[in-house]
Length: 536
Image (cartoon, rainbow, N blue to C red):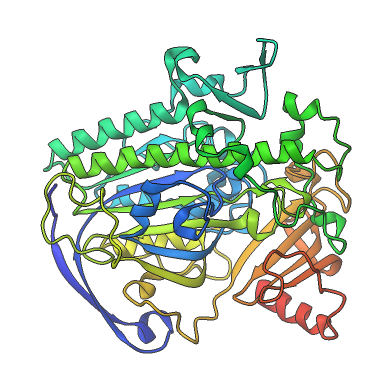
C-alpha cells in the first residue's frame, strides 16, 4: 500500500469536545477506508462477550480496534437506520421512517459519508447492501452522488425471496430456516459469497495500483437478515443441545401494547406459518425457538467468514497498514427476548449494534508489514474498549476525522437547508483513552413509529401516512426511558402533550429491560419534563 501523507495531530479534548481537559496526539497516515456493514446483526460476537458464538475474524479485528460496547441505531429497521447513519442525520431530519422516500427529494440535499470522501478525492465504491435499495436511495444506491462507480449487487440475491428451502418431502419452500447445500443453489453460490468475492477482487486491484489515490470501499453483507439461507455446514457449529432460549422469553407484564412488535416478517415465512401461532402475542413453540436461535448464530458465523476474506485480502494486498476498517450493523435483532423476534422496537436487543474502528497508527501499531502479518493474529494488548453510550450518527464525523479530513460541523437546530453537517458527535476524543471519564454522561436517542396503540399487522413497519404514534427512546448509562407520543405524519411532528404510554427500565437492576417502572416512579412527571426538554 502507499501512505499519502503523514501528519501529527494534537488536540485538547476540553477545547474540541467539551470533555475533561487532556491532550491527545495521533500519528495519522491519511488513509483508505474499508467500511463493512452487516444486516440485522446484534452484538452476538465473541468480542462483545457472547460465550457461544464463533466469530474469530471479527474478534481479531476487534483486538486491534477501538470497540464501542454501547453503540445504538437511531431506528431499528434497515432503510431509516442506513439513511440516518450515512447522512449523520436523525430520522426526524431525514423524514424516512419507512422505505418509501428519498431524503434529497423529501427532506434536504444532505451530503452522505461516501459523498464527502468522494468530494475529497477518494474513489468511492459500494458492494452489496450499503444504502437501502429502492426509493430510499433513488433506485441507484445514491449513485452518482455517493459513488465513483456504479454499485455492485450480488446477482444471486434475486433468489432470496423465492422458494429455495428444501422441505421434508423434497419440495421447495419460502422458509425462515433455510440451511442449504451451496452447490445446489442457482449458480452454485449465495449473495454474501459473491459480495465477498467482488470486494476481494477490488482490494487486490487497489493493492496493485498503489498510486491511484485513496479509496473508500463500502461492503454491505446481507446476513444475518432473514431468511437464514446459509451454507448448511455452519449449523454444525451450534448443536441444538447447546442452544438455550432467551433468558426472558415471555412478554413482560408491564410492557405497553404500543411498544410490542408482532414480527410479521417471520409469521409470513412458510415454516413459521405452519406453527399456527396466535397473533400478536402467541409464543413460538420452544423447540422452534431453539432452531431460530441456532440458525441466527450460524448465520453470524457465516458472515464472520466473509469478513475474514476481506481482512485477508487487505493483508495480502499490503493495504492493512494504511487502511482504516470500520465494522458495524444497521441495528440489532430480537431472539425471543420479551416474547419478540426481529427488530422494529426500541429495546436494546433491537437498537444496539457492534461498532469498531481499526485505525493503523492509532488503535494498532504495525512495526513492520509483511503480507499476512497483521490480521491473522489476535493482539491481546492492543484492544481498546469504550463503554461510552454512542450512536450510529457519530460514525460519519468520526470516520472523516480519523482519516485526516475535517469532520462536518454540528448541525444547527433546524438543518433541512444544510447540506453538510452532523447530528452526531466526533468520537475521536475516545481513541487512545482506555477508561470512561466520569463526565462522559452521553445518551443515545432512538425512535420507532406505530400505526396504533395495539399491535396490528402493519405495526412493525407502518407507512408514513399511517403513523399515529412515535416512540422516542433515550438510552443513558443507567436507564432506558421511552415516551410514546401522538404523531402527525403530515407535519412530521410529535405532540408532546399527547403521551400514549411510557417505559422506564433501570439497567443496573434490570439489564434485560423486563420491569417497566414508568408508573412506579414518584417523580416520573419530572422525568418526562426533562426528557421532552432534551428531545424537543
